Length: 611
Ligand code: BG6
Image 1 (spheres, rainbow, N blue to C red):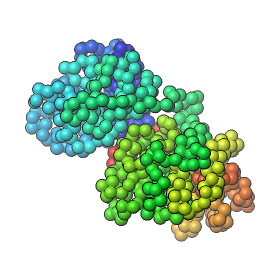
Image 2: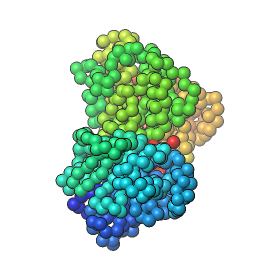
Image 3: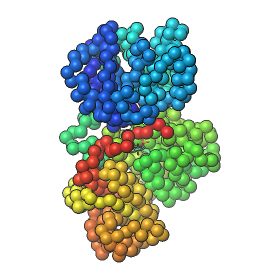
Image 4: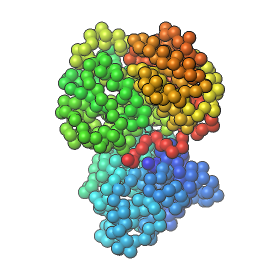
């Protein structure tokens, strides 16, 4: 999974490409490259291993006046990170120059075909194959760019968003996509393309989306869209109301801490986008109360943190709406022998809307004739476009690889879904419905309260644990569900081994790992079972564990906790939204105290669009 960007216009392309790539670095950052062309002069290509900074250093003394160019930041899938494997890639004689995000699954078969026609390959990438197969059709049939690209789209299998420069067509950039994301924009200074909105938001917020197997030609002052037959098609831009600051750090040290502080606002926005006059309205997602009323079973499918939202949701939907709810990791769901029923609902949760396993799970459910609901943050993403119903979270662009604000907005939509199903199935009264919505509307301020009151204490305790090797998170019910997210946050950004456990399960093995000063974080919010959790924490303390608790003040943990983080009271179903804040901050400050690259943790990426 990579980031691609392109520009064709009046201005120097180099600044626009480098700026765009730096905004896409969260998509992959093991190598980068650009191709620039000045009028019909030769295309100049520069590539470098590592982050964009290395590429900038390499070209700092180059006079690059070209006003047409494409760029790429890479997350290796085929061929290890190297300058040779970095994009842009070219066809054998340089007729085609290309950048690509995605994976060509049948690339070896095409290599074998092209080698019979004398093509040679210099890299280990699947992308170089694309350059040569486009070149092959372009020359064999003496056709123009659109036909060469369309023939290629029919011939290759996999996912791709590509930007292509043809030697014979100066001042034109050609794009096409299937499954991988692509946004296109235009303003008076030219035309723009990118893998994601933040890269071009500075220039326009009128964004064009092309569908799978569609293409476009970006000229200096116009964009022409094509379908797979090569016919010109009409496209209307979508207005994106994200301001540029949303994509910049606003003075915070990291995007992650900035996004943690954005949670009160985006949680409020997401609630308001579905609730008015104490009524939940999912109509803009085409999801009616009747559909929910007739739902037999719910299957929630997702990856990473989104999966943890699913675990929380399963407890709430079953308890509130009495509907059997199963949660699956997408990479398991897509290959399992599923017992789905036509009256079931498959819910796919995804921030990016592009995660390959989640997208495949969606398609599998659709193939089985089961209705699909997507809870997604990126407008126009593949999962959003392919699902039967879509509920958008309004977290805005999330840059840090470790999700925080998108997670919190997904929780909100999960709560609203549970309440609406319960009301549709009459397992709750209108009074209960109103009571829950009232309490929900108080969450943004309660999150603000935690950020104001507890942040210094969390920073302090985190610095005392900057050298830990292991940590355990325990809880029961919803507290166990949110502990999963707390544990992942610490792991993914501070590289500390940690595990989340159902508190009652600890004594069946893992408690053997507890020794003097082992950090154990206990989430204790559920009034009907908290005493059980406290006794499990006491068992751990007896073996030397250092107990840090997260609980509302009405639950007395003083006899067990070595360190208490206090959160405001709320309805039992909504505690994950409050408990997750200290959990995010703990992970963040321990990572910062360890000097980790918080926004771009090693080996991870924001959304994994490959299997
Ligand atoms: C991982 C991200 O790559 O994908 C996680 O680092 C995220 O933060 C997971 O939870 C799933 O991504 P998405 O976009 O489908 O929610």
